[in-house]
Length: 580
Image (cartoon, rainbow, N blue to C red; front, side, top):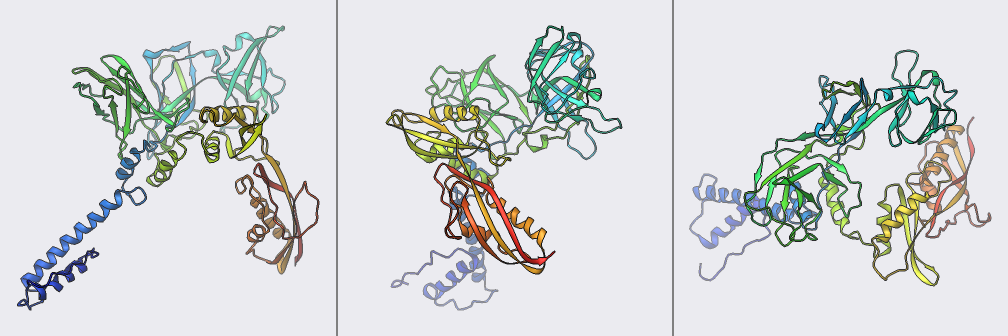
């Protein structure tokens, strides 16, 4: 035993390896031990030790894996790792719905009478969903339904009607919609939600009621009414009986809310990272405190707090340390009022929110349109991608890729490309944007409002003295013409083949398949058409930009500049062979 040291295999990780490793040491350490039978007590002990070592080895591997974002599988691990870089996993969003309320008398609901609740009828097998109106509102009986039988016509594109002053009590900003009642019992046909933009008294004495957007389709005036008294409700239930937390005066105090999940609504203000805000109100000894994303910019006297959400959707309120945010004094009573409920379960269909809070003036309620906007919490795999991505640019525009990412993050932008240009001899960043998912051909240019929104977002995040400014420009849409000869088998249908080939080529040049500056390659055309039932082979006769002269090689790729975006031009499919 004195001359030889046991050789240990540190790579061994499982039961069989541990057991065999210990058995291999017996001749070196205990040469007199010769019985290796399973009934031997020493072998039993070795097997027990190998069993425990196998379990500990698994735990060791799991702990090591959970320490890295790429290999972590537990939601708690991912949550804590992303918290180190200031990223909170998206908790989801609550759905919102337009609720129409018929009233018998004038109804003015103030802050003390809120929230006004409306819920589903609770049919067997269905989850009961409650929505709340949390902003004060006013309703008038005259706006329950306003007949439009006296209107001569309501064609598509109508954006105004004339009504007698006594027939309505509408004011600018009200939400309305048109409802056409069918002759036979059936679901009524409704216009999209409309916003009243003006109420103007005419020389005739009538009021001109204008709205936006214009009607997308025509309505029959004799069977149509204009419905007002529409308010916005959001999914969630108010929790007003949360236990009181008594502060102890220590820095960094925190307390946990008792119920989950806390309702989150989409932020209206610009923010660095979090797209939503919790429906939470915190008061310390009756004084309201304000939630912030981070306490890093808070001063010692700022009444600020921040929130954290763990892997079980439990929300914790975190107060300041004294240096960063104020500290609640010892004995102070901390009260929280919040709402719970969110997710896709709130995306209920139309005409299901029919049970209101008991108010004497309310005759009936319904949601004329399906609720929308509800989203479940971010999955672990989604968070592992979005978390690191959120700190690549850190909401600052430094590289051209940063400008592209920030521009593409603006609602309504489908694609963006940035480059350095010149303006008056000075360098500027030129950002070309294309609207999201255009359905028209050729695609439409971005609107003035969208360009202005993108410009404001980028200018607020660009470094000082690095560039002379930002220019948000229209893209150059380039039509691509393609002509192919399709040689068919004898049994193939010509009409079906032509339709299928044209559809594939149109998809190849669709908005989702193309990008700024991406060339259209001949190989992509052949790849899109292979294999195809009934097609023996395909000859590419033409692949060119419409603004360039015809000619050249049939296999030539079509190059595009970095501000150009391809779309389907004229696609000609010439079938040869096949059946009739």
